[in-house]
Image (cartoon, rainbow, N blue to C red):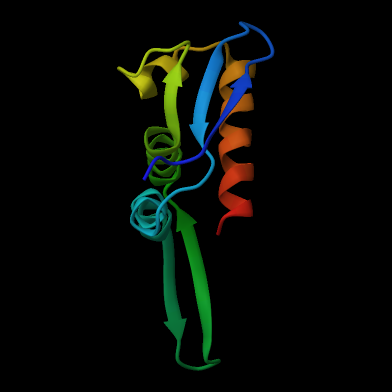
Length: 109
């Protein structure tokens, strides 16, 4: 079954980026896994609460990269080296793509 896609155009470089409009459950779990690894949590037996520690920022970045890898179909028709293509964009374009992916993920989670 062919998955629905959506085309967006980046604001600065006017790149045409094709995105899947949703992830499969497997893809979503793969993309989110580093976020769970990023959080340091431990139960506090005295108060029955959970204490949060530091967050591993590299794992948050890894989750963003996985989201890009699983959501982006092509950049200006090219389907190779997607992650590098997004990372090499002007920062405003990169932020636009990441925000678009996060918006799609929120709608479909």
